[in-house]
Image (tube, rainbow, N blue to C red):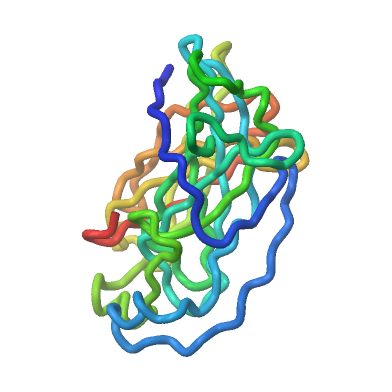
Length: 266
């Protein structure tokens, strides 16, 4: 299951929270403001609070003789409104905690989320490449700085109320992965992961263009890597796919977060 990756855009977004590789700290949310009364008004009004990056981690490895950092971050919406059109960015930091800069930009990678419900915790996974021609290597990256913003590189995602989301896109079931099982790790680090989905809407719940993010942790529970995967759109269809895991990952602590995408939100 070897893969090649393209270089991600090098842009710094929004309000940031720096989390060391082994950190699991949480940051307080900002004060809430008065919500708008329409999707358009909500998107342009002041945000009620901030999305919070509560954890992140990464593993560096080689794929086809090129270095790649595979990272994951856990994002929490502590607000009382729905965030949609979310962009998450991870910047690479050196041993002094400074952003690594090359060729006029900062080294990092981005990943998209579409909809985060109030009180929901979701995850993203991405990659940062280190080509042979780069003046840095994966060994130079000691931690990540994770920031959240909106699609199109805006500083903030869009915000609407739950009622507005239901009116715009219909019922939005809460989904979780259960019965997660990983096969034995092969010599290349690949495994099969099996799991089922359950949703608040019961057996009839059909998901809206969903995707999953596998978050891998070590024995201490620290995030060590992650991978975005495709999943079926029906909650009672068994899921099975192949992923790569680092040697220090504890299979019993593997999590699968389920994300849904709103139409015409990229």
